[in-house]
Picture 1 (cartoon, rainbow, N blue to C red):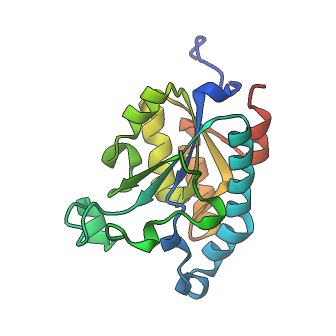
Picture 2 (spheres, rainbow, N blue to C red):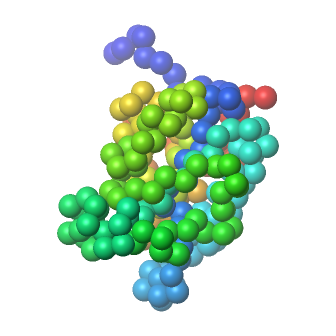
Length: 204
């Protein structure tokens, strides 16, 4: 037993805290998803987006930094994408409307949006450099998909030395079972809480 183990009940000082919304973009709510992925569609619209709105309102009120990452290639044909995205057929071309953040949780004029071309935001963007420059220690992560890009953001941020919180009701994936398994799997790398619980841990 490690008697020097640090607790995970840290208060979140707004000046050292950022909210990261992962892939909350129009490509995730194309009309065909309502028929093809009804559980995912409901999870996004009935739970995740309203939770994200509450989180954003609280973070902005406290002047926390808010950042977004979206899947968007640097080229029209996506030749710069990761091999995995090429093999998986994941392509949102440069400038595509599908790369835009969902309007209900759209960024304010001076909030940062980082396009990425892999699942891991820490692998294909300069987010670590940006967060260090902003003086961020605490990172609240939410978005889509819980068991893919959110998972990678949580694990990579933890390995980079950030204190990570996952706002679980502001996340979604294709089924409730996948969502629950993901939270259990990466819960060792972060503090898993609802948005309302996260807000209660902000320092005033």
